Length: 220
Image (cartoon, rainbow, N blue to C red; front, side):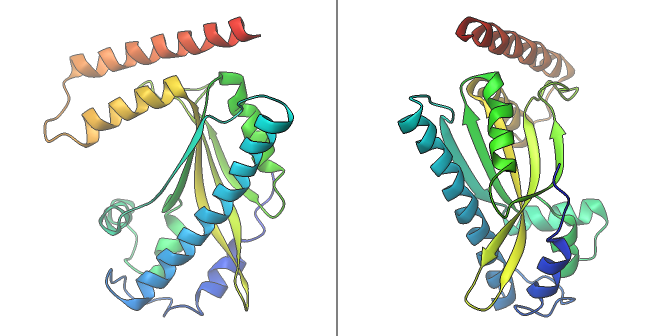
């Protein structure tokens, strides 16, 4: 794993854009500036991943990456997460403690491809890996399966370079289908999901994992 080299630099240089210990105000110029920097980081990383996708398609005739989704966390979600973590509602606390403000999801067809993509991301010049969580070989109790990375992306502006944390999730099409369904049932519904349905979701996750393994073996 690459060692984190950019975090402190990123924090220091963010001060040029806002009053660092200022309370977070969603509609201020400071908040808009910092969200723009996160958007730039996503654009930078998405471009590099799209280049990998095209390289494998054109030069190796292989669809390593099926598609890529990006998102910026909504202000309300950021504040709620900070409150749950017991953070002060300042920009400093937000930058240091909320790692998934900017997110990229990379979807592939085969389970083996997850780790190929992970290794390729590690080799992208300028990208440093801060943390990784392997929910592919070690799924969550809920059945959730995916590979998570927090990376730092250099955003080069006219006067400076700022290092920005971006969350990457790498998963198969089958994993993504299950995760989207679970998220809709658990977090987008007004009703609390029953224990019976939770168990059913875990069983379906096992079926999805078995399917991924069989397709991977068949392809090999």
